[in-house]
Length: 493
Image (cartoon, rainbow, N blue to C red):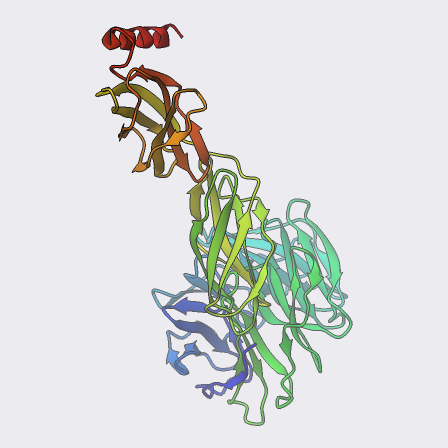
């Protein structure tokens, strides 16, 4: 876990600042920053400790800043605003939505509180709140950027609290989660899109939300004297504490999570000088999938390297299967930066292509190496060809390697005066469709010999069919005729 590190002073006298999720540009970690009361906008580079002023927003910003899935745009609002402010990162320009329509059935004095982008990079889910005279009402809208259109859903939730601090969406894109503060600071709002229904969820009696959601289906929370953790929207539970309290700071002021899965975390603490903040960053691991080794018919060894552990030990392993959906996860090993890890897998099918990738997990998130493949082996297929150059004491044995089973094979022959053979020749390295031959000597004139081709790879050894020949000479009156008769019998067999 990284240490708390001082950052450069704020460039403006904001009363409160708000941060976008983090992006990575080369080796640099960058957040986009706006604030309350001062209509300015900056990028802040955590690695070079520098602020860069960007095009000012149409209004001073208030609340969370959400990022599109492709990292190209941001969305923010002003205090008690009915209009979304959308920032194009590449173009360094702002656009404004039309005003959100009033909540049907009342609460005309509405304003936008928090939001999250859908995976299409064009739809923004919003929580809109308005005061009915007795209760605050929260309602879900969505806004389509390309058409500048608003849709509000039918149901709404009556609340005694009114401040939506953060919003996230589950990975399936079916459920929205909103972190609130106010009278019920230990609860959030869950909204099921398909059924247009609301319910509350609890985050624990000491925690409250901050202006920080991310696209890894998480909402970030903090408790005095405890530290920072997150609410996992996919499992609907709070995680273990991952950031300790820094005793030198008064309280957590603002918080942002990293980009999509997660690059890092930045948490800001109030100090005696309001412009001077400090941050804590843990990056997710980076991991490389290495080439598989010891690949045979039914097993292989998967290999990987933990390039960076993100400042804490990681659980490292692999996913594998016959498609890029994988389906099987190996046991994990605890590793640190620069260490390699391996896992032997068994029970594989022969002559089958498998996909695999390395995985590494720390308290920030899980990182994946690139997809790699290997193909399991099969035993080779080999053919015994007729012997040639048969003389009284010598002959040449011949064969062809029809299929090498996905790797070079050691090819040779067995021979002898019976089908027990008894003598094995030296071998040659061959691949599919290559022929091979071996001259043998020391034969007995006129003797009948059996032989067969053999081929060996990592998957095993296979044999060609049995063939035979008569050495020339000896007591057989016509060795040439004897040889032809033997070959005729072979064909009949």
